[in-house]
Amino acid sequence: MSDNVDLITDTDEFCRKLRLREFFGNTNHEDGSLVRNKKGTYTIYAPTNAAFDALGTEQELLFDKTVLTTILLYLLTNGVIRRSDAQIELTVESVAGLKVRFNIYYNKVITVEGSKISKFGLNASNGIVHVIDKVMIPPTGGIINLISGNKDLSTFLALFKRANITGIIQSDPLTVFSPTNAALDRLSPRILSQIHDDTTKLKELLEYYLVPHTEYSLGLYNREHLRTLDKKSETIRLSVSESTGVSINSYAHVIKPDITATNGVVHVIDHVLVPKRILYGFGK
Image (tube, rainbow, N blue to C red; front, side, top):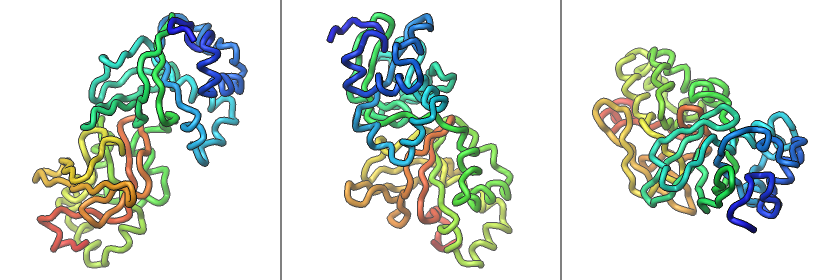
């Protein structure tokens, strides 16, 4: 395969190997016209076969031509973004009209929307191709939209409304560790009464769940201390292992990671987090 090829339209061998030709065909654009009819240069983030196979329940999205077209256009950004251009929290606009976000983490892994770029810089006459290990699914909205649209997180959202700080979860960039309703329900009535009646303490508690940058799973590491928006600068402490996944402060576990939003990412957790200074006042 030539290193200097026309993006999508002439990379037949490359696209077949990565199943992109198959999916462009499902949009009635197998001939590459989805890109060829657009002027300019592009960067394509090409998922591997394993990435497509790992979609799980999201596989059904690939059978809706409209949705699939949006996904494929989300894998294309305007202009050439080379490895040397990547920066922490760099955002660029995709052909779908939504921005995609780069990050560079402690282990020098470069990600785009939380997907690891495993191979960089396959040159094309009208752009460049990077191979990624996870299919980038376009976000359906911001963090507040994701939380409000998830019935299992309704209590968490209600607490932000009670504290009158819903605007804080519209910050960009942001990582939210969001406890489920079940996690909050395990708090005793006495503790729930305290945080409901004292909005100052409630605000402090909620700020402890928010990290002011984008931390996908690939950026988390064992014994890391993440600084949150807590005004007292108290950190959350991570434990990361292949067998048990990610846990926070020894007792909370990430049960659904890497939910992408337009302004960051959400990780769903199974336990309420409490800053050390108020731990005995609120309990776990």
